[in-house]
Image 1 (cartoon, rainbow, N blue to C red):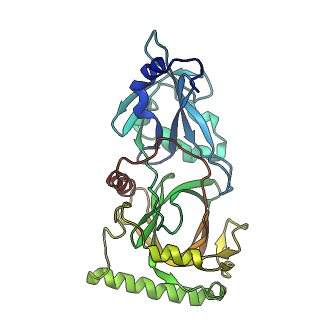
Image 2: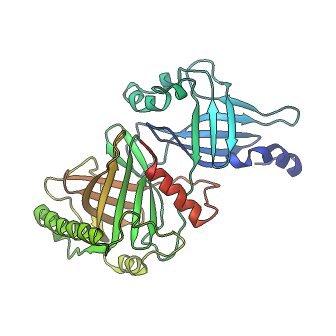
Image 3: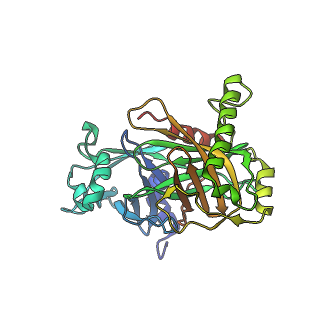
Length: 357
């Protein structure tokens, strides 16, 4: 995209802003969304994710322009806000710091661009707090998880549908004997912990036809996990936080790839907003969905069944609520998202999951 622009001139223009390129997470107490900052000719453009009316987990993530930075050699860069219905674009200010940056403008009509059914969720970003009164938003850098040959499947971003208002984005990462599906958009903290060594035998798929039998099996595993955590024989508190630099359990990945898919059907009585889920799966494990609502210090835990369908689809059956959610791999590609070290990625992930609500 350099065109006829000499490389030294181009480098001079972009050098002060090289730290802003990449993927970011909006850092507020009430709502999280994503921002992708990319180079666009002689401009830098920030693209904000959703919310959107697209409810297909296999569709691409939807972004809209949030701001752009116009670069010229003769004067300082101009930052323009692309949001709001009126006076667009208008002036915006950006402050860049290490692993975070802030934006501010004095337009307050941003919500008018959204469909009425989405304004309530999106409004949590822009109203309700004095610090958001003038659209003063702070973003934290987001890294994508590293990948290793021993991983069950390739880690990365997935999207799933929890409710009728749109999709959420989650990040799959591997940590030794555990995997995590961490929600990175939305209005509360949620993490699906997957115990890779506590597999559920599929047989020929009959396990899914009897919900009561499946429920008892998972409940027994859950009680055993709780006992072992209390006794100290199971890693607790920080379990599953093994550095991604250390390979995941290779036996699980190899076994999953070697096994033939078996028929899958949702147990009778299990609800889902997904009717086009895969009809075969490769493996199942015990998992627990850990949810921390806004304003609540104590998380709720919901044991269930993690389902690996294929390289691009995951699922989870929450037994207590009798609800199934399907995750589809995000097909978008992103630049400048590699963590400088495994420790940096792990620190970022802990930040997401422990951020006060």
